[in-house]
Image (cartoon, rainbow, N blue to C red):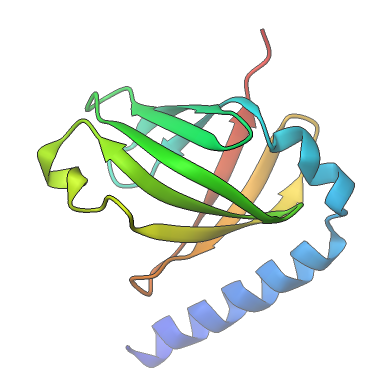
Length: 132
C-alpha cells in the first residue's frame, strides 16, 4: 500500500470515528427498516433496498442483480450484512460472506455510512430513505 493510500485510509478512519461519536443512537433507529436507495460506485447505478428487522434485499437497477442479506444490528448505528442469496451465479460465491457498516452521520431522510470490508477495502456512501 502506498504512503498516500495509507494516509487517505488513516484520515478517513479518523473522520468516520469522530463523526460516529456525534451520531446519537436514537437518530439511527429510523433507518433500521424501510425502503432505501443508494448509488453503487462500481456500476454507477441506483440500487433499491428493502429492509425489514432481519433481512435486506437489494436490486441494482442497471444490471438487474438481486442480492439478499441477513441484517444483524450490533448497536443502534452499526450493522452487519451477511449475503444469503444472489440472482447471479458469480455473486453466489459471496453467499455467507459479510461486511460491517457504521452509520457515520444522519440527516432527515439520509444517512452516510462507512464499511471496513473484510477484503480490506474501505467504502462509504449515502443511503436515502424513500418516502411514499
